[in-house]
Amino acid sequence: MTINVLDDLVSEELPADPLPLLRCWLETARTSNVTDPDSGILATVDSDGRPSARVLHLRRCDDRGLVFFINRSTRKGRDLEANPRVALTFYWASLLHQVNITAISQTTSPAESDLLWREGSITGRAASLASRQGEPLSDEQGLHHRAKEIVDAGTMQPRPSTHQGLLLTPQTVEFWLGRRDRLHRRVHYSFAGGEW
Image 1 (cartoon, rainbow, N blue to C red):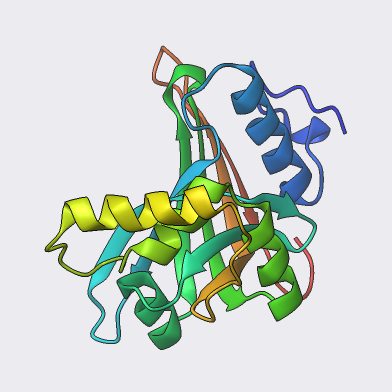
Image 2 (cartoon, rainbow, N blue to C red):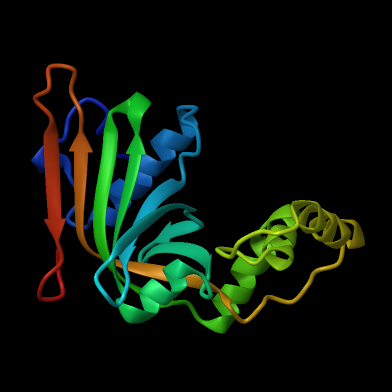
């Protein structure tokens, strides 16, 4: 799908579903030499309502929603267990593009989680296996040594059960197009009654 949204957001030209437009903006960011175009800020809240946010790498955006790969034993995993509602922001400053999303999260199937694990880089898998993400680090040299051993072994390690795909099903999506004159444009999509 080709959607021309670089200069304006014209309602007559917008798709009824926001995901094709999001994929278009992601592709524009990727081809525009934006640093980390697939990085978004995921915000969660814990069981006491305390918010936290972190940057995650988007693995794919398909007709179901947005897919990430996470370690469920971390703070974000515990937050998602307590409350599956999340907020996600992509911001590409050089393009003056921002997308704000609210969504319901759920884990992907074991088969999809396995595929996401295999698709990751060997260094990424090694880091996941060697580290105890979110816990204090007492031996940085030992961490590097463990990761290097895994990389050097060159074998595919099985996916740890705590490492799973995370599917975000959007409930709202807002596209923000910044303008130098500060007269920014926004297009807001809401999912209700089974349709956008």
